[in-house]
Length: 395
Ligand SMILES: C[C@H](O)[C@H](O)CC(=O)C(=O)O
Ligand SMILES: [Mg+2]
Image 1 (cartoon, protein in one colour):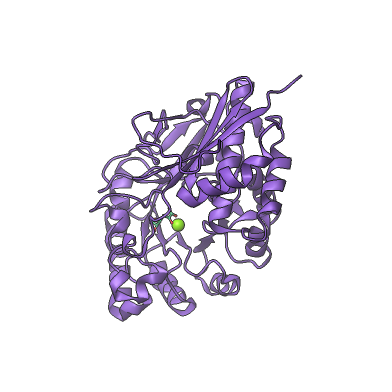
Image 2 (cartoon, rainbow, N blue to C red):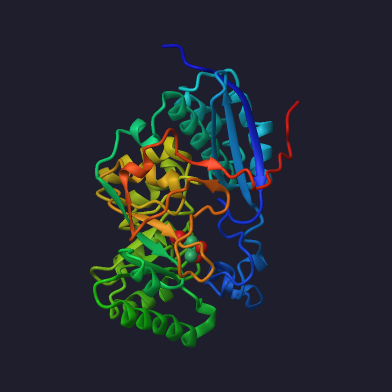
């Protein structure tokens, strides 16, 4: 069977929400005194935007095939990503068959290795990879999950990430992960405030609802260990991303020190099979949380997930909307998924990448039927009302 070839690669940037979900307006829960590694500086404590969490913006990668089919994907990489796509990566795609995903990934990774390996370069490679999967699935007239082996369950179950687990419970989610608001530099008072918040949510949500803390790389080992033990009294299910992603040794120690029954999770800022190999072989966590838009795309997540499975470790991808749903529905070692609450309060469910995509599915009563994903590609369209900017158009 002759396959179409790749005719054009285009990279756009977008501001305001979308894949850079931290790029929100004023008053959003996601920018309200959340603990970060910059929290040691009082002037950067109240707002993550104050230290530039949203400087990148969204990158949209569009890939057009010789038969006119267009695949696309979105990730967090903005103008830097657009430069890398148009000036460097496009050469590995133009003229290739749409099936050559594995070879293209290998060439993108090793051609950028001298300045890449992680971070914005891997976000960008992920965006190209996801657009290739979208394109191939559209050419074949199938959903991406079918290319990955098909669903292993009838529906996805979600926990919600947001400042109000009590509201998430009312909306049918299986759990609520809240941001940790105070960092070690805020002392014992901050630690007490963190625990009081958990106690309040436990009171409102009852004993059986999952509650988790997302610590967004903001703690040190000693504080994380103390927090974990105090939070255990309130049945905290897991403690997430406590330390720097580079501190594999700290994570291994934290996992040894954590109270029995509490899970240690991390990995949303980790990338590639080599990065996750460190987390898995060093026994850093109970659940890995790769973001498919940052870790290397679907091509790399397949390898990361297989490695995790061999280490009896669950894979619950970070955010990433449809790109994650199409993967999670196909894997036994991904028993549930994350839904990031992007409503500012958040008292209602809105699409995670709002307003960038059309047809982006959302959980209903904390669940999503597999059939909702039965559309060609990732099943989403770019919203024509959102203004795209192409800074590095070639030719
Ligand atoms: C709420 C967290 O600080 C972050 O914005 C999202 C995240 O880490 C997660 O969803 O996990
Ligand atoms: Mg997180």
